[in-house]
Length: 423
Image (cartoon, rainbow, N blue to C red; front, side, top):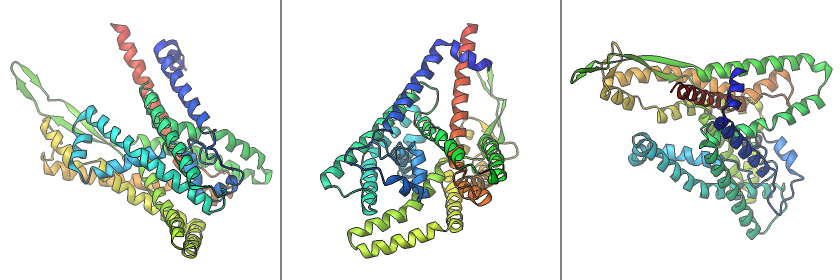
């Protein structure tokens, strides 16, 4: 409580928080503005019966269900960033830019990601509108109107990316993460209202069980998200002139959840791919498209099969993404350059193998955790029988992660100002 009071006593910090708050309100207003020439009366039932699109709707802050100008949210930018990170495995120049050129290289990397976001947002909006038209959720519209609506949606996504950059400049948190955070939190009042409306005294035990599970999940997310394996590192003593450097001990933190929420986004993309393929085949044969759609819907309507496949994809992608973002050889090389070493382990290749074994073990538990988080809505629905009260594990993971990061950055700002006060 004292820190909250301290935050609002500092004029500069108070101003930064207010600016972030204003930009998030503007984001929420954009999600409420529908694109022109669209009838949204049939959308509610469509999203209610499609779990994958419901997940994407959460990421867009409800803008997808409204078919707003910000219906894609920052999804295209996230996709572009993931593609760019995958390309670092193919093009050494991109890897050097991202990992070795510091802040300047990261700025260039992010700029290229934003350029890539433009065509991706257009293709995603065009494809999604075509799917809604083919499913008779939207009335048929001419090609010119379709292209116009796709351009409007693409512009909406780029505006959100720009807003994210403006929020990041305030150093209160990552702008894109805060936009997703605001979109998820904005849906809480509607969920609480639905729970009250659908409340049945006979299901009181199930509601209590749901509350207990929800609290346990939040505690588990915080525990795993903050969990790390500390590898002790010793720095050799070096004499330069009359001064001695090094001789200190530190540690290398290896997080249990090294991949964050990215593997879940990868898995969702794979699960959505068959649906887009089945719709795309309608260009060549409507009969084949209908058969493929029927097969896909039959597979995904089986809650047990869907949950098992989803868990498997998240588990595999956690290892895959960790191998991209964490390079034991590069870390071992950097330690050797700085005069650091792990006691009992030779510098160089032996250190890389040692770190590889550790990250493999910690990633296993991180992958299990992310897989359970991903299928948590299915598990809570099976356990409680209350579909409305299914806990969105991914949503909780994002909300908790972003909240902890914001708290860390605000605390860093407070500590910095305390040191400034000592001068």
